[in-house]
Every structure is written in structure tokens, then in C-alpha cells.
Image 1 (cartoon, rainbow, N blue to C red):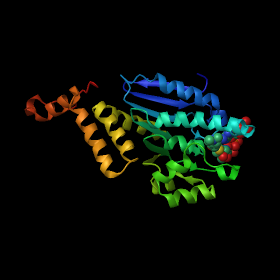
Image 2 (cartoon, helix red, strand yellow):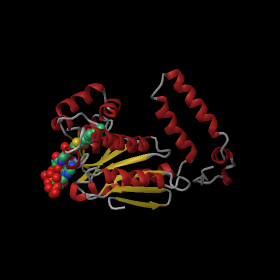
Image 3 (cartoon, rainbow, N blue to C red):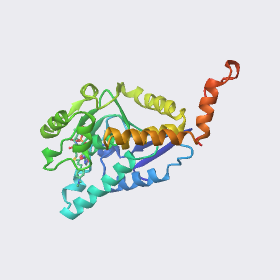
Length: 262
Ligand code: DAK
């Protein structure tokens, strides 16, 4: 891999988009490598994923404008599909994905962060959808995910004006969950990921699925989705271990249940 770094530390894996000379802009090769990296994640051991960018200036400064500038209509569509397929894979990834946004998250950069379950950022982070200034609409789901994450009115304002916002404003409108000094961002992401990885993995996956699938349907249908995924947990050893530990006599309880992911 030329542009993707992949590291595993216990049950937490980190994917770093590593193209700092172009501020980690997404070209076709980055998208292909990201796709292959996601396919190769060992879901038997990895329970939470962190996505970040190399360096301390940029998470992802968007789709590669140089590559895009010469695309024909058909090539533009193919590029859009490639990106959307990877972003959707990330969004539907069975385990939680935390975006650790370490600088610019513009255009496709903002969009890829919104395909993750949780966003935290450094204090120098800048978010924005500048596409209308380039003569295009957001193409990797920005119009859809931003409106769902913040509000339609706020998303429309940001997208129509192409205005970039800093970390504090992103926090205020609910686009990110927390802001950290740059050097504390990755440790904070790792701590959060480890906290997630320590929980019963099947239950965590089912929570992700329940929230994501439930948001697409009516509340009545969503509750049925939750019921099903709740029920599924009762077939697992982890449910027996978790509840067994709660019910065990005080002197036999363990502080941390070691969930086996089965
Ligand atoms: N693409 C390619 N190269 C980029 C880049 C990008 N998006 N962003 C930065 N770079 C490169 C610069 O060209 C420069 O390269 P060299 O000149 O050194 O070779 C290097 O990174 C450093 O950038 P700067 O010199 O510009 O650094 P500054 O600190 O001065 O400025 C900046 C940082 C982030 C404010 C600035 O680089 C900037 O404005 N970058 C562009 C940000 C942007 O507009 N991003 C949105 C791109 S549009 C689609 C699907 C999706 C999309 C489109 C279509 N379809 C469905 C077909 C997505 C579109 C986008 O993401």
C-alpha cells in the first residue's frame, strides 16, 4: 500500500490515510487502497476502528481536484461510484469506526468523516463542503449525511455558502463529539476505541445496526429492528458472561468481563 497505513493494537485498528504532500486528498488509488484495507480487517480480533490522516495539518482535504478536473461525465460518475462504495462500506462496517479528524476535513474529507460512527477532532480542524465554489455538488454523500447529522437548515447554509467552519463551531452544531489539542487527539481516540472494544462485541455491533437501520424507517418498524437485534444477543456466550457476572456473588465477580465475541 502506498497511501494507507494499517496498524493493529489489540482489539483496536487504525487506518491512516497517508498522502500528506497532497493533504491526504482522495484520489482513485487512495480509494482503492482504503477499500482493500477495509476488506482485510480481521473482524474476529478487531472490535473498533480509528480513521485518521497523516501529519498534523490535514485529515483529508477532499477528493483530488487535480485528478477530478479532467474527468469526462462518465469518468466522473465512475469516480463518484468508487468513492460512494467505499464510504458506504465504511458506514456499514460491522464494527464502530471513529474518525479522528486531525486538521482539514473539506469536501470528500468532511464526507468521509460523516461516514464514520463518531467524529472527534483536533483544535486546528476545519470542516466544510466547498464544492459549489468548484462548480459541483458534494458527491460523496455530503448533502445527505450533513443534513441528517446537524440539521437541514444548517447543512443547507454550510453547503450553499461553501463556508468552512472551525473545530469549536463543528462541536457547537453537533458535527463532532469532542475537540482536543492536536497531540491529545489520537490518544483520546485510542482510549475511546479501547472502551468500546472492551464491551460485548456482538452487542456493540447490534447496537450499530439497530441505530443505523432504525433511522431509515418509521419508529414502529425501528422498534421491531431493535427487538430482533436484542433477541439475537441471547444466543451469545457474551450475554451469559455479562449477566452471569452481574448476578454472581460479590466475591466471585470480576471487575472487567473478558468478552469472547461469541
Ligand atoms: N486535491 C488535490 N491536491 C490538494 C487538495 C485536493 N483537494 N488539497 C490540497 N492539495 C495539495 C495542494 O495542491 C498542494 O500541493 P502542491 O502544490 O504542494 O503540490 C498541497 O496539497 C498543499 O496544499 P496548499 O499549498 O494549498 O496548502 P494551504 O495550507 O495553503 O491550504 C487548504 C490548505 C486545504 C485550504 C487548500 O489546500 C485547499 O483549499 N484545498 C482544497 C480543498 C477543497 O476544496 N476540497 C474539496 C475538494 S472537492 C464526486 C464525488 C465527490 C467529490 C466530487 C465529485 N462525484 C460523485 C463525481 C468530492 C469533491 C471534493 O472533495
